[in-house]
Length: 366
Image (cartoon, rainbow, N blue to C red; front, side):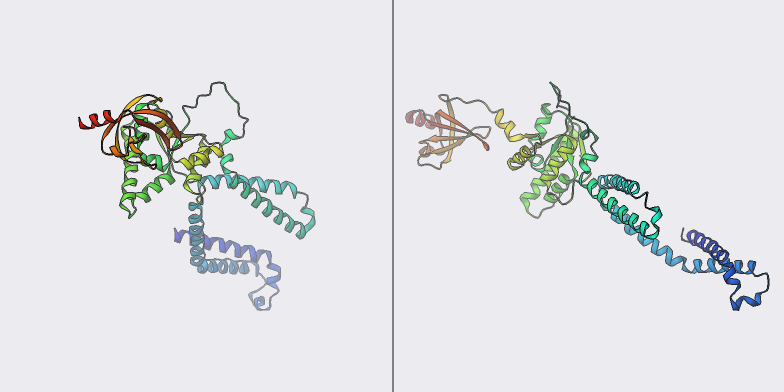
């Protein structure tokens, strides 16, 4: 390839030498040191231009080839680092800006050099503005449905909307059980930056973090290979400077999807930005058995509470029960009566009191 390019450069140099000599033939004939060539000096001068131009291009060929190769490699490396979405939107904005500049400066041809300089300046300015605006608005440009007015339907079917998984819900693992039951419909989208974060966690020096990261990767492998749920990996990055949570919310807007998470803070930020969220913790609280005041239940007291005399126990689903007067029965199983139920953002708490000390003692002895 190098040899071929060098030969092409030699031919181009020879042609340019002939053209240069032909355009300046009269001036060259008048040079004193060419007067001895004879009266028919035209062909000789053209031959000198041919040989001289080709020789110069042949000598300079390697430097020109290496310089062009370095410039191409540098440009290719820079372009590979830019997301495809940025390239497409930036190209559209640049063309629109240059088109507007051409239309505005089409009447400046008669001003000579000054008019040409004005045209170049206006073209650079409008092209740069179009490039910057299109890159900033790339999410809207790459999503044509956002250009059209939204039509509200009475019974919209949201089941087919993509569900985007965040890192915390993947590590938690309950999303795999939900998919297995068939309650979660639509494709599951796993962003590439979430996979990258999982990989960093799995490679952590901390044993606990490493185990959590590997568990998340195992959960994804289980969902993709053993379940019938459609799984898609979104490879394109979303504004590399943003945090993972911000990227998730932007991706949800681009795909018109929902974020699946159990992160309380991400849930609140998504509500402020109008992004639909499916919170696994809220789902778990919703499907817990309903407990009414006055009902009896049996609970194992395992530790003391914050207030004096209180004991703490847990149901099988993790619901915490605060037993009034249960501190002296730590390590025992007692019968209690529910007095009230408190629903919080972190979950549900049940407050209860001992049914009878005698019954509790008899039950613990049994």
